[in-house]
Image 1 (cartoon, rainbow, N blue to C red):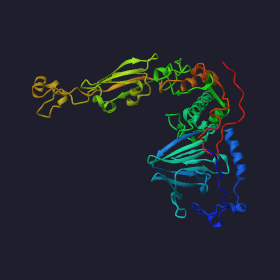
Image 2: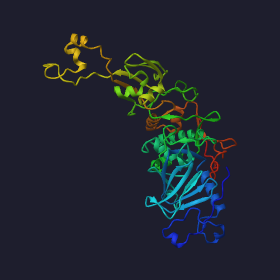
Image 3: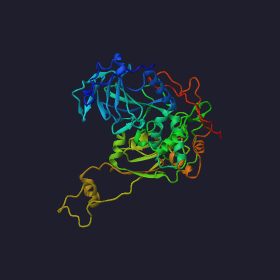
Image 4: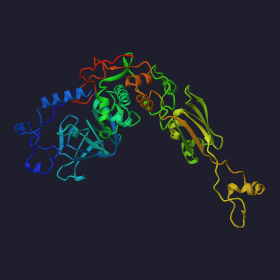
Length: 485
């Protein structure tokens, strides 16, 4: 998509500068008033500066932040709002905010003052909205959304009755937050560097020019919490590995990772449909992980909600495992004997387990009712559940057999996550032993090589169809190639 030249707006009148915001679509945005403008560089120079900055920071990635009926967007250093053609709709001062709603399949924009709609600025609706943060200092060029701040730009579109907010941000600007969101920033630098290379590779492989976005900001892709997750150490981890990716042959690898494997990582083919040659089971070093071993009580109400098809759970039997010992298939038996077979991923999702490396035991029985000694029917009614203990023959003659009682189970497991690829706690342990990030990555991604990604034709680092305007591809000089294993 070709970039549209921004409109140059003249300096607003003194009355406006003293506190009144510009009305949307103001006639002050006229090319004839160019001589009076005090905006930054002319369009050509500004575009050149933007291109140089974007090139150095890598290609754009598009990250889905939120989908909801409406939300507020704030700007520490100010905001500029454009429509899909690049026409400027509104420019807000530092601390400005807008409320956005979806109405009739369009984005309705309402400027705010002191947290309330600003009556001096009329609301408008557009089919698509772009929001750019403004600031005199680069560190202030952020926008706020749902108590978090982000760099880059925000694209807002109406989709299925909601507004979809997508952060369009240069790759190298995005990564310091991902590293800090996925790993504690206090961890050894080599572990953070390994995470940066894995996250960069994963993000590049996920770029989908024809899709609405490339990544999500959650564990569905990789966690991205915005500016607050950036630190000096995560920025150093990103900048010191700039441009480095993991490749197998001539292709980027699928650089998946997880928290802790529980002692051994998983073969990708045992969990997913395809076995990748570099995603094979290897020994993990996550002995110090707080989730290497865990227990989770499964009370009757949770089991009933998880398996409504069987009317609850009497027992869970693991009937097939992977080579590493994770659940491949399990059979769930309900109180009435009805059975259901599920795979490991379904079992984990339904029960909210940390991993599929798990087994099940009956929870220890405990009785907290009234004592049997001295019990008299004349003093208190006998609870039905203990009546057979007091008067077995009378209870059997008086009523039909009760249904099997609901039981509690305990899940006893190892690790946290799917178990494929790099173990983050394992990377921590190897870094503490003095291993460099390349060695850590080569252990968890067998046969993969760490090297700069080529920037030739067809590279995902080149500008692709569907890229947003004003963010060119990555054309900076490659960094020195690391020695291969």
